[in-house]
Amino acid sequence: MFGKIKITDFAKRHFEPKSGGTKILDRTPEEFEAYLQKEVDSDLVKIIDGYAPFCKLIAIDNFTLAKVGSLPIDISNYQYLRHGYSARTEKELPVMSRWFELPLSAPIASYLIIVVYSQEQIVKEHSASEYKDEPLYFDADWGVVAILGQTHPNEEPMQPITMMRNALGVEEGGSGVKLDREKYLASVDFWSKNAIVKS
Image (tube, rainbow, N blue to C red; front, side, top):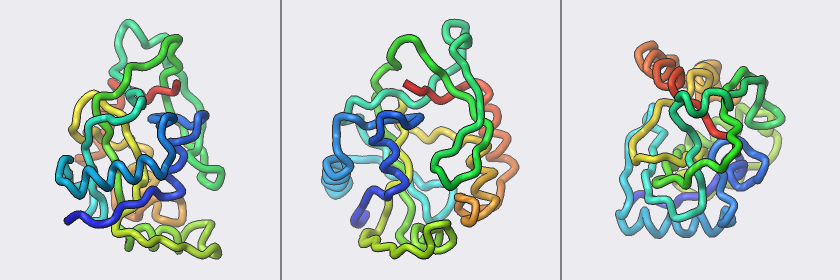
């Protein structure tokens, strides 16, 4: 049995209309969490080992109206590429990022890839964060940290800047996992040809 799953406060950004990347606007975090738990408990999902022992990816058929969170860059959309400095939270340092601002809505995702961290890792990152003085009550085995809308059920490389942030450590909003050069270069190759979608 996989264990109990909860959506972390960090992942609740996916349920906000102005957030970047994949948005879940037709379910509340609680509804999403309940459906995900039911599917995981019934073994109707694909579980993928993540980039570290504390990380797993859950691949599930999209049960929401979430759109794809990234698209390949091609002749039909390159003119909609934008770039600038952004941060995922108010407390994080802004980093250079690149995204699509499409004139039409992105397609509905076929799959959701749900990134979860173990309870131990969530507690570790909280205790080193700017919120360390605030009490953390996390009563689940796994916490959702990201939701990715995709056209396929396989893992896409995390962005190079996310790998860099992770290597900087939990104090800077990362996980503390060292940079893997081979995975970093694979990430650069993928994200040179793809970009996230802001819609």
